[in-house]
Image (cartoon, rainbow, N blue to C red; front, side, top):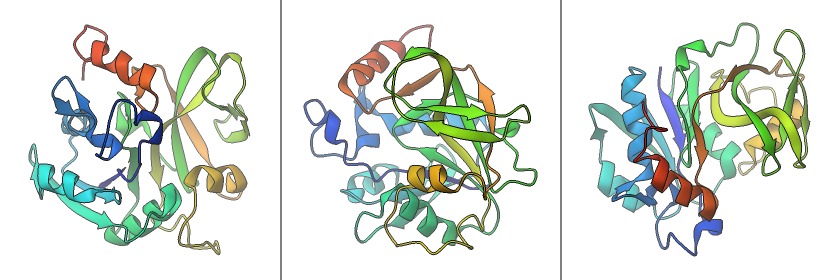
Length: 228
């Protein structure tokens, strides 16, 4: 199974720390964040990756080329930024079957083999979290189908979208979509018709999209908290 990694983010909220490179190329103790994702994928026996790239993609391509850590790399290059949904839709043209999708600015150390579609078009990896307000929460029914997406607010306990998905090759086929769209918005609008389901994990999770979590990962990646 091929893995699509979304690498088109501008990193606007990280501009004070990370300048002039795509967000997945933010340096963590001397190496790009994206390398941590590749090292994780090696532990999951992934052999082929599609990097969905846009902003200054040459920096990514010059670093990783067409193979990294024995993982074959293809590039889905956006002529203009397509948003997360448009990026996935374009990258799916390079796959012949269902595919995994990862955010290029998050690290979620889960066993990918637990994700399964059954009769759904998408399966989300959710992170169990306490005392949070940076993320919206995802609510499930007793059979692990998504019931609702709740807006950002303070939650004492809940499940957040961990930025890893197993998607059907034809997930977008029955929808009339613009070339540029948000995958998160698409999910929130269509989770019922997609029969979206989820698996819950409590593994290590980090999203480096804001300076305080970027700084936290600088420390975590050198400590016992972090391991593949």
